[in-house]
Image (cartoon, rainbow, N blue to C red):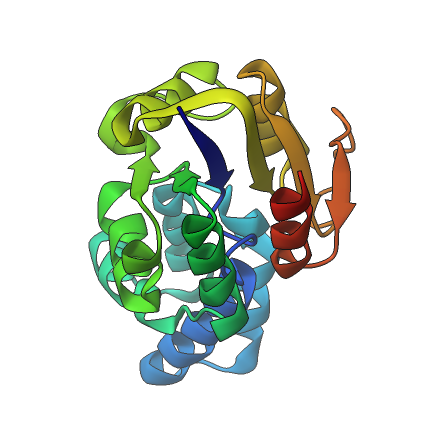
Length: 209
């Protein structure tokens, strides 16, 4: 059976925080607010983990300007980008016989638009979005669903992501080998099998294993 390589999306395959900053600068400028509003959004965003409704409600209370979650879901993805070397790495894994899947926590509208805008959707075998399947990382079931979708086995597979409590823990729960990308989060457990600065470094590890 084919081997499985799973990748997180935000702050793993793409610079989610960089895209949020770019969107915040654009939106604040359009609203006629000063740079302090950008700083506030970035500080309160918590890497995307603050619920959007809560974040925007607090923003309106602070700055007197309404932000729509629906508008954000449509607008923010256009500020995302992917390094060509990342797409090349995904393609190289598929060429080597791996089934490559994006396993991401998040909403269908937001994540689907990011995957399409960056071209990642076309570079992988399948994209598994938590809202669509009703299960979130670190629940092992989301990885089993991804494996079944592409006809791959969890045995000998990998999970690559930036968050220990979701990506690494999820991979461990599913019996996958794990690679942590970067050090975006203060959480440091569970420990991944490997830690790299860029997802590009993960491709070589997987291909060698």
